[in-house]
Length: 213
Ligand SMILES: [Zn+2]
Image 1 (tube, rainbow, N blue to C red):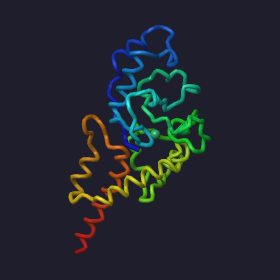
Image 2 (cartoon, rainbow, N blue to C red):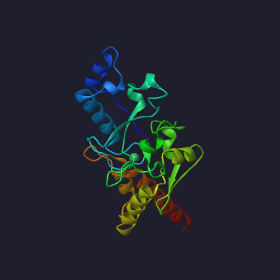
Image 3 (cartoon, protein in one colour):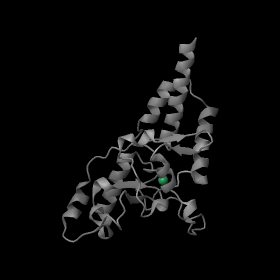
Image 4 (cartoon, helix red, strand yellow):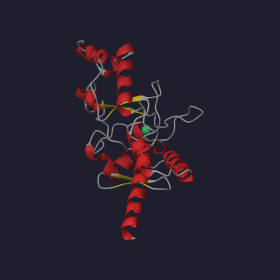
């Protein structure tokens, strides 16, 4: 999970919120599209939780960190919103998947998460492994559970990204790390934080080796 730094809500959305008696359900058309675009831009077009690619279309969900059902007063709060993938809630035949196979917002539902991607500490709470699994430290354990971050689909995506990287390992790991930490044409690489952690670990190992010589 990558730490997200939010910018400002778009004007169309701010104007909509000034209309009396509006709620999230009544948000549609231009203000909703502008909001989704801003969330995507802030996140470099990757899901706030799993890091898969998300696009400016109806498959991308506007996720409420604190759910609308229990925190109604935050339903139009920009700082409570993120852009998330659809969490695999439907299979290829459009059948609804059982909850234990879903991830991200679709798995989280009305549950709370102990810490969100807006928190600076988020990146130190999850460790990604070469086999594609992720392990949480402290409250990170709850994050993994609540968001279904170890569902088979995500494990296999992360594993293949690490495998591809190792098959074509770049010579300059520092440059690679810098590349992964930056947006390119407004987008982060899919699952960039997984590789980022992996490359940082390889660099640390290299330095240790050099120091030992
Ligand atoms: Zn996701």
